[in-house]
Every structure is written in C-alpha cells, then in structure tokens.
Length: 82
Ligand code: NI
Image (cartoon, rainbow, N blue to C red; front, top):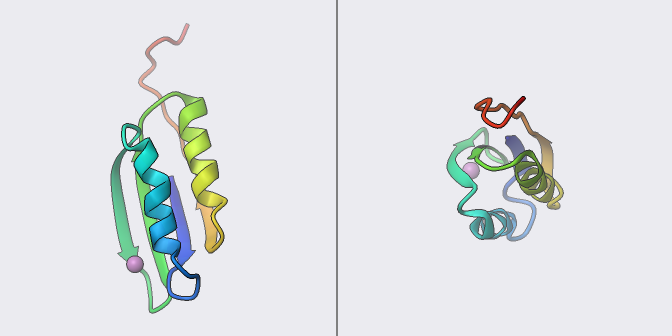
C-alpha cells in the first residue's frame, strides 16, 4: 500500500503512523519513506497476511488524520485458491 501524508503541519503524525504499524509488525514486512518536498512524504509499505488483515491495516493507516491519500494494492501467491 502507499500513502502520502502532510508531515510537518499535523502534530505527531509520524509517531502515530509508526505506532499504528508496530502492533502489526508481523504483517508490515518492509517500508519505504520518501521526502517529496518540504511538507509532504510518501510511504510505501509491503504487508503480508490475509486479505482481511492487510485491508484492516491499510484502512487504519489511511484513516489517520493528516494522511492525504492512500491506496491498497493486493496480490496473491495463488496458494489456497481453487
Ligand atoms: Ni519524510
């Protein structure tokens, strides 16, 4: 998933985003943080888990105040598919 957040004008936003990820540390297996300009950052997270689990994590992160845009993209190993 990826999301863009306004970093400097929302108090403790970075802390909130990090706090939100720690309870899901088994599912958030990689992350990328890019400082886009003076005020905006882009984060990309790689999550592993069931569709329900990764969707819940994405919804929680995108719902945090200060996150301007977010999108979840899912794929599958094909395991357990009929
Ligand atoms: Ni940044």
